Image (cartoon, rainbow, N blue to C red; front, side, top):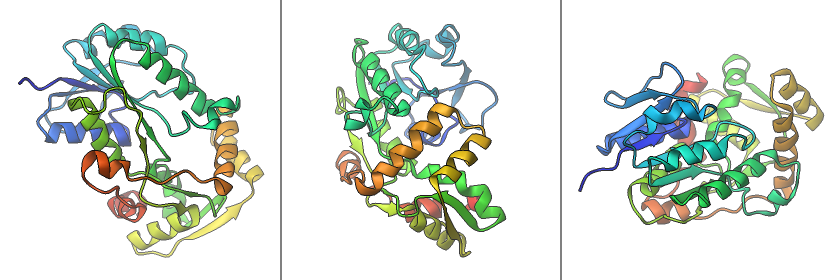
Length: 284
């Protein structure tokens, strides 16, 4: 049986990069959609294209059977044309969505992230393609946003020390994505994917400190201070307005924890401690 050729978008990101590496290691022909130079495993084909310009995707999609779709924008503008382009070539799309889709969050107009994921899922499901929508909780790799502070000061200044989330390792997301791309077991599925336990932000910092062998401190700020820092750092207003209020609600109503990663892959989800150990070089 001929192996499917798979196009990975977001191939230079943590999740997309892990999907590329896992497919390549398994001997599955994989192509990476890139906008410029990219550091990819030897033997992985890189093809230029931009999801913001559907007309640029033809060469990347030629001969492709399945697409791993990571949407890089904060709205669904242009997504219908991209999915239409995918449908002209591929038979399957696996979309990296969000755990917020399908929860009460999608009914709240301020939830910009959930809204675009909800619309992307709708478009994917209506496309006529075989589809899977992966719905992860927070990414462990979001902690990389603290890397500069950790390297330079050893202090992370952020709000909500007690915010606890079941953060998921990108390698676990990639393992489920590869299963969805290369087998028929997840067609039409929307698996909720979580890490193995709730870990507070303060504890995350401590675990990173243990991994790098240096004590770190979490300095809790107010939400207002966090908003100002995000704006000063150039975060889009819609994202600022969406992220912090949604996280604040999770303090009293945390995300669920499940064993879906283990059920789908046969391997238990990796802990945040394991993620920190895998990313020591990013924090030193």
